[in-house]
Amino acid sequence: MAKQRLTRAEAREQTRRAILKTAREHFSNRGYRGATLEEIAEAAGYSKGAVYSNWSGKDTLFLDLLDEERSSPGETTLRVETASTGWALATLDFFLEAVHNPEVREALAARYRDVRNEIGASLAGDDGEGPGWGSWEEVGTVVMALGSGLIIQSALDPTSIDATLLQRAIEQMLKSPTRQRED
Image 1 (cartoon, rainbow, N blue to C red):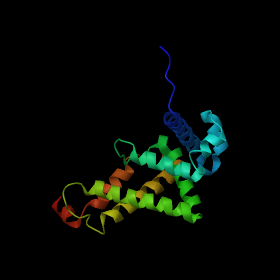
Image 2 (tube, rainbow, N blue to C red; image 1 turned 45 degrees about the horizontal axis):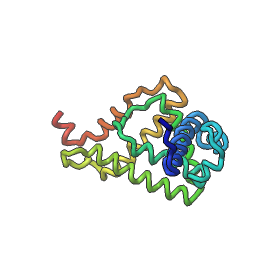
Image 3 (spheres, one colour; image 1 turned 180 degrees about the vertical axis):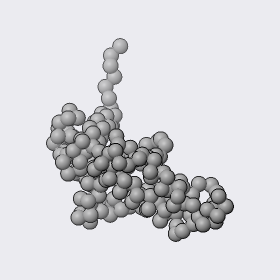
Image 4 (cartoon, rainbow, N blue to C red; image 1 turned 30 degrees about the vertical axis):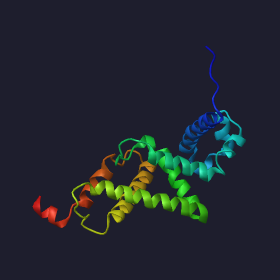
């Protein structure tokens, strides 16, 4: 039986998947600033033109990786994982680059707003009770800031940060004065 050829759309999607996978590995190992589109394309087995036919530049490629990560099914973890530190640091590296590029900054800010709301909604759960302070989006903002800070500290000194610290900090933060008196 003859092997069926991929359609143009299927071939394009296969190329995108291979480049995205390779890009994430390169960004995780080299940081956002250290990874180049040329290296990513070569490692994925494609030309730089294949990258540019799918993304306008390194920033849009990275934004797609962030979107892919957000849309991936799976359990959200509140652990500071050493294995993911490379990717987390690349994300912080990208954040610092975006601060100086208004177009990229707005694209990233929109994604961060969505993530803050998702974190807040996730922590709110079904009990309908307020966070005890501010809004759930504010809680999401603090959770993201704590996570970023712990990732930086973990990258500098991997043995100093317990992987459960973020989870425990969130649990303490969400205890309302009423709940604390009842406990």
